[in-house]
Image 1 (cartoon, rainbow, N blue to C red):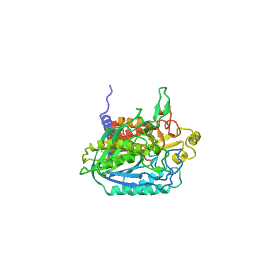
Image 2 (image 1 turned 135 degrees about the vertical axis):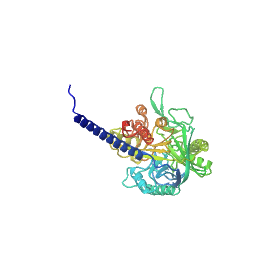
Image 3 (image 1 turned 90 degrees about the vertical axis):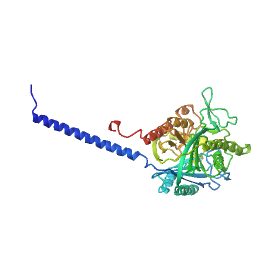
Length: 471
């Protein structure tokens, strides 16, 4: 039997110890890097929440083409009610989030949004613009014009000033969330017994349809003394009570909603309407002609929703939080165009006429980028902002899948990329599901929802970027 030399054994032992020490040092380094990354992903230091609000009228002068109806070729001739931009700025620690709602058919495009963010970068850390989707607002043209139209330039300047004003008047604040139920609309893509889809534009007899989401989500922001500063309303329903015969600027039923809510609280809070996943949802009294009671139908719709918002908002008891936190991100998802470009252009002209480019883009590349914004407030309230018209089932799915209980889905935000039908809806067809008004590949809505869920999980620290063996 051969025995190892003592010196050889000692040498081997030292080498083994050196290897272990190097491995340990490498492991410690990786753990330090991982810990540093996690610290970087955590929200700013805990702090009290502060909030500020502002609003500004952005109604253009008469003569601008109106959004939304291909058979309405006459430009706006006047104003029924002012179009507003409303601003809420929230601050926690060193982070500030600006939420801007606008009474427009869609949010501003990339160039205008970039200008607005640059103009307010000293005031806020992150900014989102969401439209009410009124079909009685001016067409937004920044996506197909060499220069921003004059009225848009004026509106953008006013919005930037409003953001600065809100940020300059922050006060100690507290927030709370509540929910109610209201039915003011129906699913406009009705599936018959034979499985065929039919266009169901108006439903004055209020026949039940599905899917529909009657959930009224309300976020109340109070000052330290309990007085309301802002009331946010998240609900899904196309703002199309007025039809193509209306040639006056109007926010449609969201104007009445805001008036109802603000009046119930003495006119002090600002009511911000956050349009939800309304891609396939119409109000019961959609496209009601002015001569057939369109104004009255708008009041019924806005007041019905507004009364429920008031009931819910008055029942919310906000509480101060010394550990308020703000987290946010914007991801750009690459997706393909759904159609052959030549066939799509041909279909656009056939369906929407020669003026289609006033509402929809004149040209869409084969690959697009969808900006998806995710905001998490106090690690308990999540907001997902989508750049187009998501079908209502995505709103329901977001509340079911979101890692936190209070989940708001907001459409028509930070740009416009047409309709996002569910995969099932795309197979059934119909407007917004299989016609040229939807040009993003099928399944894009699912991917955006997945991105929101992942982002919130990351913000909560449930998903990291290193294997768990190194934790």
